[in-house]
Length: 167
Image 1: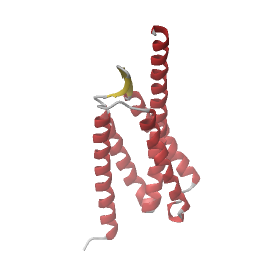
Image 2: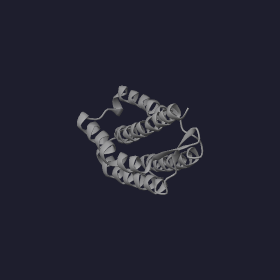
Image 3: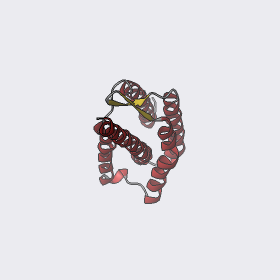
Image 4: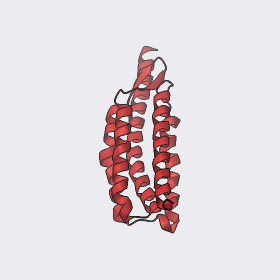
């Protein structure tokens, strides 16, 4: 008979793989449709509700660990996503350009997060590990989406300025 923690670990790996694959598919499909302010802003807002997990005592981690995880997401993991995500105007709509490196970068980020998870799990409980990696993911997504928002608004302003001068 196997140890329950092993099944928990295996379940987390499988779930993470399925979610990572779903994210890649969704991002590739999203590039075929125009983007909007709502599509850029809603994911980090929705994800921010995850901070409620810290109301549950088993999820709590030391402030320093949480700050470090958020900073790693912010300063290291967000960078490749920001650099490879570009937008373009096609007719009246704004689209996210599909990057050839995007799938590769997400796969690398997933592998690095998976390796880091293996390094910290011996020292933390499963809920604490989840909380730590939630903060890392939020630190990665927030600046990426803010960069997308800035580019989207700039393209919108340029389009409006062009319309005013030509019409």
